Image (cartoon, rainbow, N blue to C red):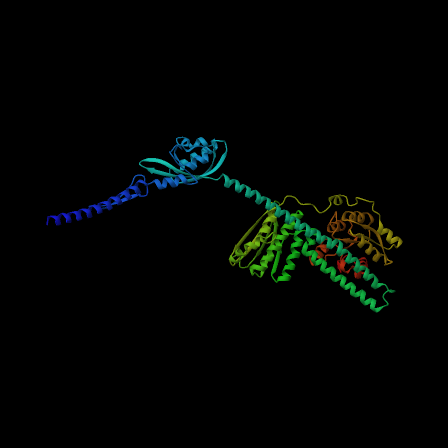
Length: 562
């Protein structure tokens, strides 16, 4: 019996010992976890319920986080003295962390930057503050940093928590990016100018070379058709007539292509006339009623400026047709002496999500809004776009007026008789019965020869001279007093329209037959408004030139179009 009791006691003791060992093992693990900073708090169950005790050193994980972060972190007092700093803070300043602590942060700033920091510290005592300052490192380098300051009020002590992000490399990258952006902008502007120059060159070649040769070809064919000896053969007559028609068709196609590449009105008559011409064509092609409001005598701008504004009108009206759904559009221009404002508007759906979704398309060079902005930026101008859903879109191009060239040579206004001495030809004609005298003004030698041949085929007409440019044409007109001037509108040195205005002003009795490959209604209206007595397209000169010259010489002073 005693042995059984002892055995039972031993078993009970062994069991308790095992439990104690398990408990001790658990306590050892808990203690080790606390020692290693793996436990932040302990929950103790007691008579008063569960209690939470935060363990000393529980901030260790956060300290590790602060010490290993890339941004600099520090604690300052109210005067800006560094009370604590992490490793990154010291690395930003280029000195060991232990040498930073205890020093004033202003020590590492220049006087102007110290003022900024003091203001930020003052603000941070009340609320969070942010700003950028330039620190001077131990090796004299300047580093741009962004600092964020937050107030800390603990145990009655006022301190400031500072987070410092080094922006030097990012700032340098931004500057490099901006420089590259400027290079790309300049390159895109250069490409736009080259594109316009190439369009102008090809258009001018088509006009000055191909178009003129086709005009001469048409005149020669017409002369051959009128030759009685050569036209007895009906088949030959038919072939000549067919060739004349084909020549005229080709000339029209060449002229259309030339207009699309670079509208001649832009160079010859200026932006206002070019916009009128384009808007009329746009309305005819699309059915969108387009009104143009441009003051009379609108200022002539530099060629690059007129091209840029014209391209804005083109692109904007194309967008009206493609996207707006509007039945009407308008183009308005005004000049206040300091800048030109050109507005293109519609009454359509406005710019919505659909157009924004198509934004990548608009970044193509020379196309869309981006192309318009770049053209204007190159000329120190800007583009403004306002739009409201259901109430349309308005695109406004604004360009400063730097200077513009006067198109009229003022020396002829002051002294219309400058050049060769004039002679009283009208009196001589009345007394001696001379033939009517014609002056040919065209900058193409081949065309002048063709016109001379046709004029001299009429016994009542004679060519008294030829002029190779606008200035030459005006001088010879004022000096020789011809009965009629056949005047090409597109002339070098002095524009044909300006020559026409000077002739009308100083020699109103001399009749002028304007002569051009361009036969749009807009340019014809401008020519007649300038005072021309007649207009003849070079495409039909072979059939009508001599007839129109005779009609003008025998008619009162009124306009004739052929």
